[in-house]
Length: 119
Image (spheres, rainbow, N blue to C red):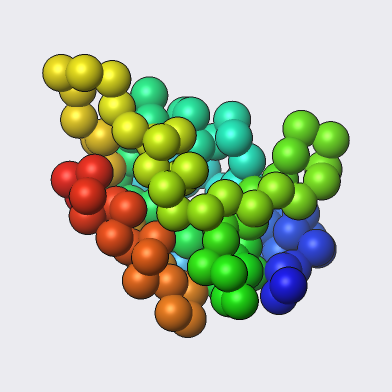
């Protein structure tokens, strides 16, 4: 299963890179960089986001499963239908996400989840 386990270190590098990239821009940004887990998916469902980026380091290419971190740091596989169930808004609501960027080779099944949810 291709999965990156050094997530915290990479998040710190990405935070520094984003800070340097946005430093000279005269605008306001709110960036949330975290290792993907159920808490973050529920935040996405409830609060939404302008842009969401999923990277290949959190994806199982063999089974088309999204890999998230469990409560105790274990890896959990989410098939596309389970991801859709988690993100599906309550009746009368919409998923408040404007754009999803998939940096995942062969991640069409994840993209379809967001299309089906109206993104």
